[in-house]
Picture 1 (cartoon, rainbow, N blue to C red):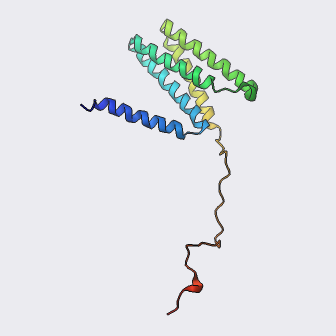
Picture 2 (cartoon, rainbow, N blue to C red):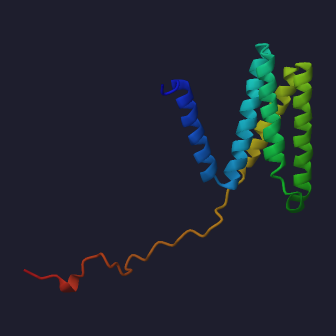
Picture 3 (cartoon, helix red, strand yellow):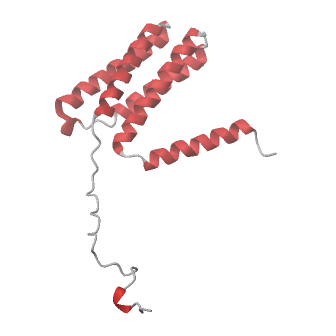
Length: 157
């Protein structure tokens, strides 16, 4: 009548993910993409070891989609110059390794991609995410406060 508990939990988790994406800074979005690709690759390794071929293929496809459609697509090669070009080549290499790992059933290739993703994520996290707006200044201690009691109008007993 109301659906399964499992589907309710999935819907709740999806809302949490969507809320996190909407509220995230561009820096945090890239971290989330790395995390998603890492989880998909780790999952593919486990599925490969369990000989779950259909699930392994889905997880590898998910990792490729995150790398190509998220990380690689977010590169600005004009503004990023040589760094963006090098990252683009690295993302292309990771995608190729993932396809090869899927076709040849080689977990070592997945492990290599996992290491690359983790290293890039760590480097990205080390970048200080500077706020894009100026923080408001706190008012001076003696600033006028319309809600503060006016001592001159208080009646002395």
